[in-house]
Length: 429
Ligand SMILES: NC(=O)c1ccc[n+]([C@@H]2O[C@H](COP(=O)([O-])OP(=O)(O)OC[C@H]3O[C@@H](n4cnc5c(N)ncnc54)[C@H](O)[C@@H]3O)[C@@H](O)[C@H]2O)c1
Image (cartoon, rainbow, N blue to C red; front, side, top):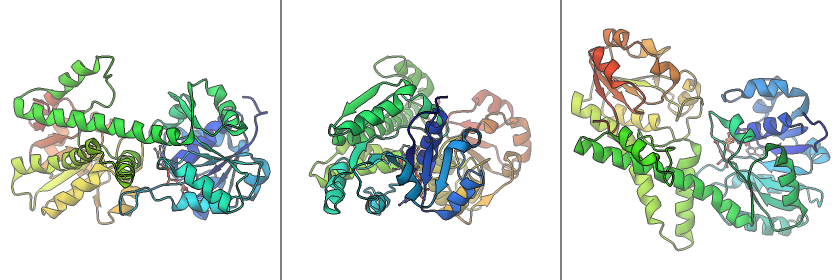
């Protein structure tokens, strides 16, 4: 590809930072990456990738000559003008976004009219305005600032980066926004140019809308269960309406992941802090929390009491093709089941290491075949492809009980029943 593009900087080499870095390297940029975590940088320098994202390792290897890793900003500042900020903004205990990593970056960058901070991290609407004031107070007012929120999805992040639905660029005029637009030009994506606050709000509103769609279909699924209707057919029937669309209409055990949970909560609190009660989002969050717990009620209905019962969880990651455990429904499920005295065993093909960091006492099996042995019930939590190909007759032979709860409506009820098992999905008559 074109090797004459200008070098860029990426601050924070997590999911967003690494994908952004390798994506821009793929379209010809030299990319200077910085992270405060020396272990992560050492791994990347050895060609190892600290996270699981399909295709990432191969693409990093293919672009290794254009990727530079360091714990210091010096090389980046010397070579690159556009500095993409991709640090984490996790929730605080109060549910707002913790911007301490963003402020650490602001403190660390030098005063310079030759650099642009391009905010990829998801930040509350109004953050850009505050950061510009802080930069001015630190004598760094000449540093330009652009908001360019990221919309990639873990599991398909590289494709999302290279083929985005849109690129949103918020700025206050000047050349910095144009430079970011020019950088993205080879991707030929629709570009939305706006002010900084609106760009920040687009990101939060997009995630809040998607989460609302999921909570909506989960509520419909729960009503379907009461009325003997099938949510899969209902979702198809409403999703074919172009005004609605079929995506994010899969009923299940609730949304998880680092983004929906924290961004919906952050938007709700952002509104509340400015005096507005965002009633709809309160319901979206509550519905999601209840949805994660509904599986426990289903298990109780079949196996009461749960104390002493062996429950096998297929999948831990918040969705397939990622090792990310942030906000994963499996964590709530495992904790609630353990609190009821159930004996929980789990298996995930990729996310076990991350899961053990959050729940060190999790009992993890070595394989899907192993986890179901002597189980009274099996719960599909993450629809990894290998779980969809299980031989259910073999599973039935290995289990102690007969119950299969399909938390993602991803299994074929006929096949499960033909194996002599009892199938229960989410909102499936
Ligand atoms: N993960 C997603 O799917 C996704 C999608 C869109 C947007 N976002 C947003 O992008 C941002 C980053 O998310 P992520 O999932 O990549 O987070 P992450 O936790 O995977 O990565 C953040 C990285 O930043 C590094 N870091 C922290 N402070 C730093 C500093 N002062 N200097 C340099 N590096 C520093 C951390 O060591 C870590 O490697 C968040 O605001 C998130 O909401 C995430």
